[in-house]
Structure formats: structure tokens, C-alpha cells
Image (tube, rainbow, N blue to C red; front, side):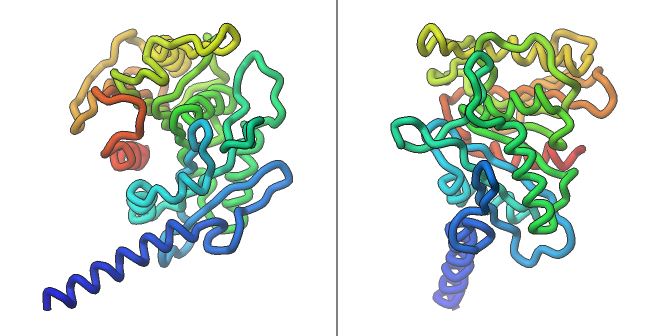
Length: 275
């Protein structure tokens, strides 16, 4: 009986792994193609009707397929009924991986905000997704890209969840409108430090605390300090509650470095489901 149970466990695990690994365009070979880019998508097994979605933006040098193959994170999201979408950034000049063209002082080779909106629209139309129930999240440079989309086009997605990535100098001092946003960052992050750092004179990472202040002002939150702070596992989560109706601002800190820490996906999904 124990062997049978083990075989069943291995079988189920194989199904989950295959679901994530063969996910180019919901199982079709190659990514989903748009006129100005590509994306990868996997839908939850047995999904019926419209389903919500989480769009995940990869970090510097990554690609969408690598994100979709993060089994532990993606399978958690699939298990909660979400489609998972992983767009591709633009190829780097050295040909090693991809990145996002977001820097405020650098001419863009692609309108990334328009591209990500096009990805969401195409996936909703092609796979029957709930367009008004999409969370945009991203790691590192993908977190920066998430922040810029939230600032430039707050109504493009239902909510935003940057992790270990924020604005670069010159930082915006105001955004187009209020948002639902959950920023996560490690206190020991040396790649994207909380206080910012200079990569070179033309590329300077901004101060994350100043970015949170911009979000607070944009959301019309009355108090400079968070109204409440709760401990969720390794995360100390600050929450501003006295803000414009329909907005939400949370800032989670942990003791780790530059990573997507354990428990982040569940924490953010549960937050998204409170909307």
C-alpha cells in the first residue's frame, strides 16, 4: 500500500512538473507571439469559465520560460486557480538573456507598458481569462518594471506586487493615479539595496523608502507611518489603511537578500484575493 501511495505521489508530481515545464503557449510548442514580443502561459488543470491570472516579470538576464519553470511558485498559483503568464523582456545586447526597457532617462526601444497591456489583452481573449482580475508582479528588474507600469498606467492591472525591485533615478515624485500595491524587499539585499546604489553615473537605483512614500502620497494615505504592522512568517508587513477608497498599500520587509523568499507567492496571492 505504501508503494502504491508513493507511485501515486510521483505520478501527481510528474503531472505538475510537466504542466509547468511544457507551458510555452499553454502546451503549444514555442511562446505565444505578438507583433512586438512573446510570452509564455500555463492554465490551471480543469479550468472552466474565465479565470484570474498572475503575470510574472523576470529579472535581469532572465526570460519568461525560466519564470514559468519555477515549479514551486507557479504550481502554488495554478493550484489556487490562477493562470500564470510570463512575458519575455527584450534581448540584451550581449545576447545573454533579456531585460526590460524602463529607465526614465533612456530612449525606449519598446513601449514596455503597452506591450504588457497587449500581453494581458491577448491572453484574456485567447484563453478566456478574466481581464479585470490580473495581478502584475515582478522580481528585481522585473520589480522595477512592475513599479513603472503601476505608476504610469495604474488601471492597467487589478493590483501590483514588485519584489526586490523599485524605481531608478530620477525617481517619480508622483504617479498617474492610486493603486493596490504590495512591495516586498530584503533588508540585506545588496543587489538592489533599500537605500539605492549607483551602478554607474547614468544608472542609479533609487531609495525604496522614498518610492513607498510616493505610493503613500499617490494613494492619499493620511499618515506618513503605516497604520499597522503585522508579522507574517519571515515578513514584517506595514499596512496603510487610512487611504483613498479602493486603494491598498503594503510594504513587506524580511531579513534576507536579493531573492523571492519562501512564502512570498502565498502571501501575495492571499493579499490579492482580499480585493
